[in-house]
Image (cartoon, rainbow, N blue to C red):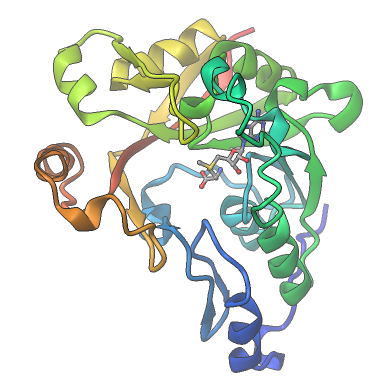
Length: 288
Ligand SMILES: C[S@@+](CC[C@H](N)C(=O)[O-])C[C@H]1O[C@@H](n2cnc3c(N)ncnc32)[C@H](O)[C@@H]1O
């Protein structure tokens, strides 16, 4: 299959592109065209060399929980033959904790927020990209509806799922024979220290900015094993770094907790960026 081609970046006026990008709020920091960048909450650009991407040239790839599409567009740039990006069609599909849903003042559609795919579609238009967006939950992945993929990438999503094993079960069904899962997810530094060689988790599952399962490194590896995957390559640890528009409430306060996280992040990732979240990437194959 031929590689997907994006727009000729030289033909676009960077100032005009930047003006359009700045009209939206962004999760990801993406170099959309030379001289124009999305000012996101987070920045993963420095981590790309650490993530064990397989050769995707001409391959069919899926990015699950794509948000603004950082990984999907990266796969396109790496020459994938076809890239499909999925995210929830509606924020009601988020695994909101029961207590949050029980609050009558809580709007599970997040109707006051910008549509989740707004940024994805703008990048798509500007770059004249061929990446296709589909509104689907990870739990709904099914070869009968989406086909199978040579690479399925799941980034920073398991930590937000109430049932990560069920989600990975669905992922396994859509990995083509000989294909891979590239899982990138959060490792909680304190749980990692406490784990001391055990697959340990802290269960949170509270609040509307919820995280469900905070994993130690071996915890994440055990999830992959239980869900039927063998790990071929594990990356070095790295940080999901705050981007230009990181919400100011947390790390800029520089609390004691921030300093502890920073010290532990340094220990594991040799990166002491304030507000960074420890991550690791695993390139895996289905075992059955
Ligand atoms: C923390 S963001 C990570 C974005 C991106 N994958 C990355 O690694 O940078 C989690 C994303 O997963 C999406 N998401 C949450 N629950 C999902 C589900 N059940 N199925 C698919 N996507 C989901 C969210 O809408 C959001 O875009």
